[in-house]
Length: 291
Image 1 (cartoon, rainbow, N blue to C red):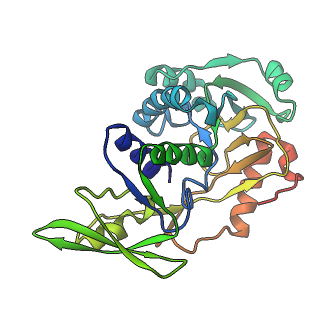
Image 2: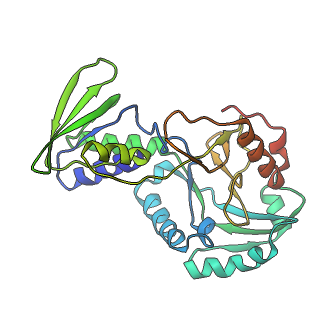
Image 3: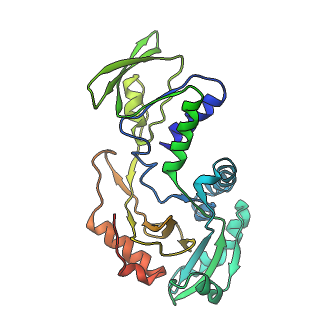
């Protein structure tokens, strides 16, 4: 995923010889199943101010280093009738506390900017959100790695480690297409497997306690808005619409699960996402979803 590809590129730039393996293909996990929202940090000013500050820093780094993967859409935080008025009133001060840039936008102006917004809109703030293509980001990172002599193997799964004196000596790999086994000997092994980090650690006799959560997203058949649209409330389900090229991505949910494999969207999740989304953008009720 993005983390593994990014680490591989970083280490290659430092002069190390890198081999990256992926049990499926690039971005097969969370790095491929996401909004593509490059957060300004405004979503987290209440629930996680430290994350908000980090987002604000990282968005500028990514725009500078991988700007060709980013669409500088901008974003709107939109409140509708019935939303928590205290949260709406506190939003500017929470942004100030985390150093998140924002501007108050008149509702009439916001409706001109994004005509699909609900006529029940009562408050709007503009923020520095953007849209990123995570597939392009990982592919470009790995192209850079291979140009510096690094190697990449897809459809290759880690089956175990040979360990001597508490030191990993080599990793046993199986090509899932051909069935062939091979070994990778290295001075350092990096576990960048996201939700599967606990499983990989267990192969080395280590324990990482993991908590798993799945999220469902809906992809529309056309682009609904120019900008990212966020619900102006505490972060919860179904409150973000992100433009991604010629489509928009609506979501998400967050449901605790036992294992990260074999997870699927449910009808209840889809209904919840549409019901919440249409409060900001009524046309989401009747639009066509392709995925």
